[in-house]
Amino acid sequence: MPRPHSKACIAAALFALLAAGCDGISTAPAAQESAAPRERLGLMTSLPLYWPLGAGVEDIASGRAAVPWQRAALERAFVLEPLDTLSPIPGLTPDAPETDPLAGLTRLAVIQPRGLSPADNVALDDWVRGGGRLLLVLDPFLTGDYDLPLGDPRRPADTALIPPVVARWGLEVNYAAEGAEEGAADLPGGIALPFAQAGQIAILPEGTDDCTLAGKHALVATCRIEKGTVTLIADAAVFEHPESAGEGGAILRQLVGQMLP
Image (cartoon, rainbow, N blue to C red):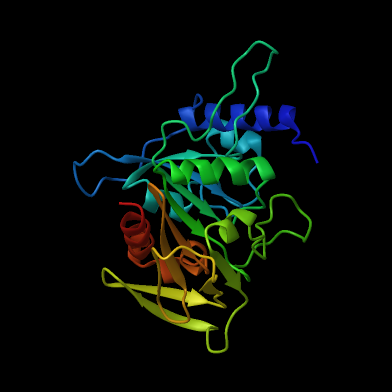
C-alpha cells in the first residue's frame, strides 16, 4: 500500500517543531553527569518514552506534558531526535527536495516500533550498511501497564512486528522460551539486564559470521553489517519499568550507551 506521504509530512513537521522547542516547552535535558558533549540519537518507538502516555498535542505544545522518566534518563547522555519515519519524506511541493530523517545521524534506537514500511526497511538497511549504529528492541510480549484500550493509536504495540530487514541481517526473534518469564541477563560490560517474558534470538543459517549472541536465553545479538552495527534485544522491560531501569534510569542509560558507543 502506498505510504500516505501527506500524513508523514505533517507528523514529521510536528515532531520537528516540538523537538526544536515551542513557546513554553522546556527542552533542556536532565542534569548532566559530566561536561562531555551529548551525542545525537534518533528515536523511533511506540512506547511512551519521549512524550507521556495519552498526552495530546495541545498539552505537548503548551508545555503541560510531563517528561517521561525514560527520556530524562537518556537525555543525560544524548540529544534525542524523535522520528516517526525512517524513509525520505517528499517535499510539500513538487519541486521541493526530499527530507531524509536519517541524514546526519550515526546512532539510532528503534524500540518496539509499530511496524516499518517497505521503504523504512530499505532506508534502515542502507543506513546501517553505510556505517550507522542501531539499537533495535523487539519484544514479543510487553509487560507494561498501558491504560488505553486495544486499537487506540496511542497504545504501544503489545507484540513486536518483526521487520523483514531483521531476516536480511540473518536474525530471527522467537517467542519467549521456557524459563524466560522473568530474571536478569548478564551482558558484556557488567550490565545485568532485567527481562520479563523475553523473546529469544537465533542466527539464521544464511546469517553473517560476524554476529554474536549474549545473555540468558540469547536475549541480545550484536552483528556487524558491512560498515555498521546492529544490536538486537528481544525484550523491552528496561524501557517499560522504572524498577528494572535502576535508580534514575542508570541501567537503561548504561545499556544504550554501551550498545551505541
